[in-house]
Structure formats: structure tokens, C-alpha cells
Length: 442
Image 1 (cartoon, rainbow, N blue to C red):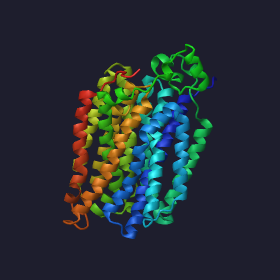
Image 2: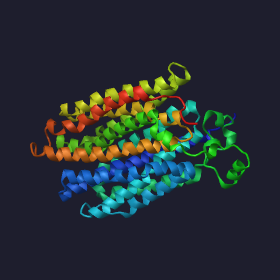
Image 3: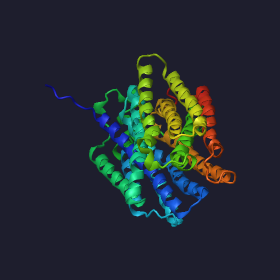
Image 4: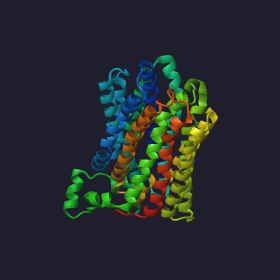
């Protein structure tokens, strides 16, 4: 029998899926481990919010530089460097709530390092993945975030309980080191021979960073497409880009608020123990994993079967995802049982993930050559959402303590979940009005 060849681009997608999983194990892990350590040290909610949001300051600063570096140096190399940097930081830094300065610097550094990851991934996927596979490839890659978050919620509370908060840092560093070795061993740039129609389709070798010998050929009359300057002004002024930016902001506002404050809501708002909740606490993130892939497959099905245009596919899935998520977010404080809260948060995060088949793939629709750059710009907005949302939620909860000292009433949490719900509705309207699935930047 003939041996079936497994295309190299599939390995690349699988490795980027594992990459995002490990990144989100780190983010959820820090939230869980720091919350336990901070509560033991008597740190108040506002101060916890500031430390939890510090990561996003570093993350915001490196998004656009990450896209630029991936465009100029190559996403494959930048991705490896960023992983090694944050893994080493986790391995070397002690988790002590009293060492505020050390924790701030460490979280800033991890944020800067991880800020290079998603622009690099989008650059790599734009090079490797043909247009008709992009929705499901990006959805699978990004669904790793949610599987990682689910795994973190399931296993890390027990690790903290039996081995202490510091053990989480060491486990995350080990996972980061193992992925770095896999990427170094198996990742590569796409050869033109694998994609003979790549240039016309807008992916493949034609999107790789230009090398010195190739620059000479361009100067002597070769194809200059790959050496074109980045159209920064057009990118910043483009309404389709802003539609992506607004939705990225909202998606990450809701995601980061739930990721950082859902453990506190379970423990203080509902008086539940994360250890005693068992596997139910991972359901919101597992739902994101499932719905992200469902959204990707639906999007590619609609496009390849010509059921909807690329533009209408993106708008339809984005709108359905964000509107349903909005209703579920606003309903979370109404449910006073673990099953009700898990159900609402699962629906909210699941449909937000479905919506990623709209705005999150749209980078590569409108600007395949500059996918990393546009991703960097939009993810900067998403990171600002993390800074604002996590810190603001901490302040809202601290203010609510004047009325409800133990934060157990629904009113204490209502605004925390209402704000992202309202943002979901507004951003879905923006995407319907201004987005497109057509190629905007050559």
C-alpha cells in the first residue's frame, strides 16, 4: 500500500495549536497560583487586580513590534525566541506576593515575550495555509488557548494544593521548554515546491521575509512584491481593520475578565471551592475549544460550498457569536448555583469563540501579506482590554465591598459582567457595518 503523506502545513498547525495551549496554561496558572498566594498574604482585591493586569501592559507593548519582527525576521524564529524568554522567566522568578517589584517586572517580561507569539503565528499561518483552509486552521490554532485554559483550570488547583503555588511556575516553564524543542526540531519555512500557486493565492514562499541575496535580485529587476514597504497609514485608517480592532478589544475584555475573575467569583461570589468543583470548572474553556473549531469548519464550509460569500460568512458568525455571548454574560450573576454559573459562562465563552471565525480570521482575508502586522495592531487593542477590564473589575469589586463585605451578593458582580455584555452588542454592530472579506492590501 502507498504510504499517505501528511502535509507539512498540518504539522505546523498542530504545533501552533500546542503553542497556544501552553501559553494559556501559563496565564490561567498564574491567576490561580497568585490568587491563592495573595489571599494567604491578605492582599486586597484592588491590589490583586493591578498585579493580574500587569502582564497586559507588557503584552500590549510588544504586539505591533511582534508583527513587524515576524514580517522582517520570520515568524518561525520570533516564535521560538519569545517562548524561550517567557519559559526562563517562569522558571527563575519566585511567586511571593510581598515581592511586588519582582512580580511586576516578571509579569511585564512574560507579557512582552508572549506579545510576540500571536502576530508570529498569524505570519506563519499566512505563509503555510491556503485560503480555503484558513478558517479551520486559525480556529484550531486559537482553540488551543481554550483547551489550555480548561486543562489549567482542571489540574492546576490540585497542583497548588499539594505542591504549593510555586510549583505552577515550574510546571509552566517545563511545558514551554518542551514546546520550544519541538518547534526547533520540526518547524520550517514553506518551500515554493509545496505550493505552486501560492503567490497568486496570497500565501507560501512569497510572504517570507526577504534575504540579502534576494534583495540583490530585486534591485536588479526581480519581483519587488516581497520587498514592499508596510503601508502603515492605510492600515491605521482602514475601516475594515478598525472593525477587527473593535471586536478584538471586546473579545479579550470578556475573555480576560472571566479568566482572571471567574475563580474569585466561584470562591467569593458563590462560596465554592475550586478543588471541590471537580471537572465542572473547566467546562467554559472546553466549550470554547469545541465552538472555536465548529466555527472554523462552518466558515470554510460556507465559503467552499458558496453558501455565503467570505464577507457574509465572517459577519454572520461574528454576529451570532457575540450577541448570544452578550446575553449569557449578563445572566451570570442571576444564577446562584455552580451549575448555573458554569452554564452561563460556558455559553458566553463558547459563542465568543464561535465569533472568532468572523473577526479573528479576517486579518488574513484583507491583508495576507501583512497578517502579522494587522494582528499586532488588533491584538494591541485586545491587550488594552485586558489592562482595562481586569483592573476595572478589581476596582468595581473593591467598591462593592462597602455594601457587601464578602462579595457574595449578585449586585456586587452585576457590573463586572454587564460591561462586557454591552460591549459585545456594540462591537457586533460595528463589524456588520464596516468589515469585509475581500483583500484590501496587496
